[in-house]
Length: 113
Image (cartoon, rainbow, N blue to C red; front, side):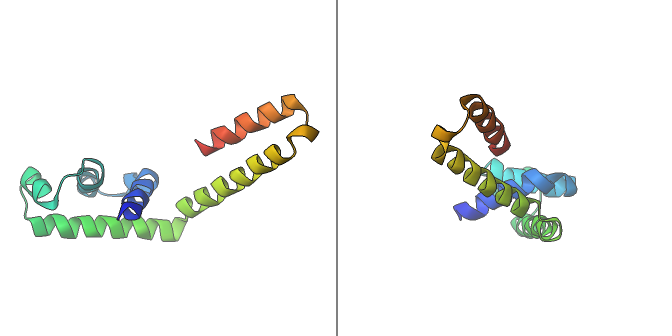
């Protein structure tokens, strides 16, 4: 479940603006504010079932955006490449110019943030 929560969080960060305002609200309440379906239903004045189906459609929309655009997959690939470069810098630290190393490490760390 934690993997799903993390994935939805990442997808929401990338594609959340593409959801309707109601879908955004549902995702925020459930995944970020940790409200139950029943609590969200009371807050919005709708049935628990309406919240469930609305949340399910929101999740499906986020997954569809990722399937079509692939930004999360691209971001993960970039992070893996940065990690490899940091490993190479560490491995060849003694052979490289210290000023270059500091600058390269700074840039790579910024890319991971």
